[in-house]
Image (cartoon, rainbow, N blue to C red; front, side):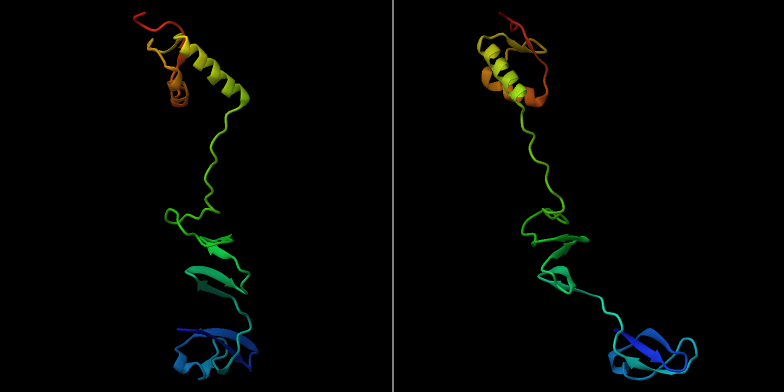
Amino acid sequence: MPLYEYYCEPCNGIFEELRPMREASDPVPCPVCYKDAKRIMPTSFAAFTFRDGYPRRIPDDGKYWHLGKKVSKLVTHARPNEHPEVNKPEPKKRKTKGEKQELQDMKELAAKRELVDLYGNEIKPEEVPQVVEQGRVVRKGTPRGL
């Protein structure tokens, strides 16, 4: 049912009433003085409409709303209830010069067969980045069985 505004002349009051559309123009008793009040045009207007499946405020500024936050474009693919502008993924961590140099030194030690893990297993040069990424303990030493 729509919400209509009514004006009561005797008490000079404006009030709202939920009524069926067919009864919209009929007078309504005032909640203060119980005299009949006539329907008027709305004194305030706030609208929220859906366009392209997303809610938009009126007047329209060309932006969309996603879970109460303003976004500039529609979501085309994402997980449910997520928007790329609202739920930004964390960027990949970049290695510093020192970390890159340390990896290079470890690869050189592995090429000389002087790099082992915590249990004394030999680490090959191509395995060094994966081992470090996994957080395994790496140290200088001779492999078991040599």
